[in-house]
Length: 343
Image (cartoon, rainbow, N blue to C red):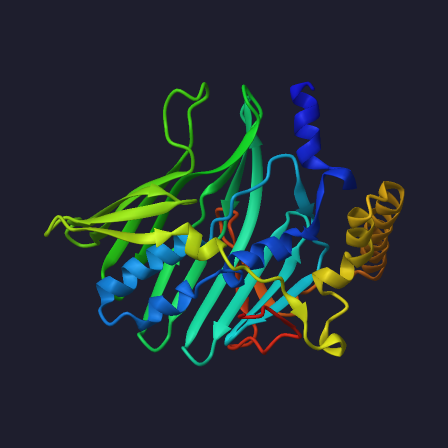
């Protein structure tokens, strides 16, 4: 298959190459779909340094091994995804379609934890790969500690030559102005010919913001284990074990059918997902086209009335550099009609 055909696959895929879930669901899973509650650990640690280390470990845990050649559905404008896991309530909304921008708000009112994320993927083709630059601000707020952790996301690298594959790649910075610490992480992959680099590697350091003194260094693989070295004592500690995160995962279930919004991802794409599960490609194409045509009709209707679509759960802004940001309308996310069982 030629390069142009590979690029076409990732721009507009037929249902045969779709995962039976929306991108919005995959985005939310990185927060609520975990075998162990690493988010609560961030708040429970006693010292600012230990909390920061826990945040770094949790940040690594939000990565999921992508599957080459298969992609989730592109969310429609206004699509939502609302799921609860124990006390953590997660709400996502597709707040823009052109360009595609997704917003996430997750809260644990008992632990006073809040997540506010905004994500826009910008694909760029460099001749041998498609680099999806993930733009947008991410914040983790430990409200009872008075701490806000700001971070970005690595990029999604879709390698076409010489061997097709997909990896997370690039630099991530985590900083907390309140405790004066920051972390630099680098996600790597094997080189063009596979002669250099380590598959799904992550390495980096935690340092003091003012003095730039490195306190800890860490190294490992985000789909296996990551070890941290204390530069003062020389002690080595495993701060992340992917097996804890990926094992024992539970499928979300509908707990309150009447409470499911018509905009919920599972409702929007239910017929298409059922057709994919049955390998009924004709029905899948028909259903996908129907969803897309309905969106075009709604757009024409808004344009004819001179109306501008407004998100239901977020306010949306765009800075001078073209980076999108969002703020949730409500402080706390309510419990969801879809839940993730704990056992």
